[in-house]
Length: 101
Length: 198
Image (cartoon, rainbow over all chains, first blue to last red; front, top):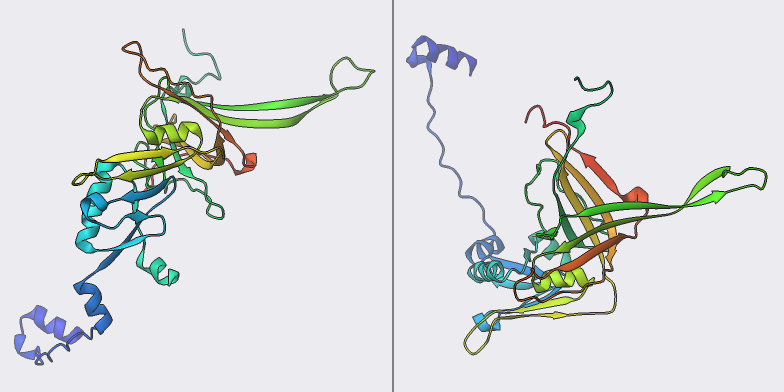
């Protein structure tokens, strides 16, 4: 490599060898990962002193202290409503969801 | 006339304090924000700001002493600390159910969003039990950086008398938090200088 760099710096391009690049292998994606990226689920919860964030008026499941799982789009709606109504909602980290299982 | 020896006017500091609160959780002690959160920046959840006050905050540490005396001496031969109380007090000047809950010392809030034939509402349920909280206090120090107090376990036991006046004054809720943790658990941190590099 050092010789190639020296040759390139000296303008002697003929000494630089170009091997045809092998096509990059397709990244291996598990079915579970494909499913996750396609319909990401988000778990949101409220914490004390908030007992419940009742979203029936908006056609969504309530956010509870135990945590409720939403699709990504629903979770965005919930977060917007939470800001509007001043209710702090927390996203449960995926690893802690795993731990909970 | 020059400043007398030993007097440093730069050590005289004036400034407000902000008080943050979070529920006390057994086994998960509250922590101050990271050092990278500078003075005046918001503290992240679960910390919540207690909001505006009538006349700022007071942080008081009182020491109750016991004199040890002997008949043969008119002055005590020793004075021992019999008790120490730490209180943070102020009058909350923001009138929401969340502020009432903090002032009343506990309760639960249920929030309902508005929808078709459904009004938006929030319900505060009070309770007899005094809940435990953690408090953080932030103020500016002589270096122009933060001074932070962490009081990891308090109960709020206030005499709350809200006045509903036509125009004479705002509604206020007295707030007095009493520390119930060992005094050694209380931390006071002064930032003296920023980091010198990344």
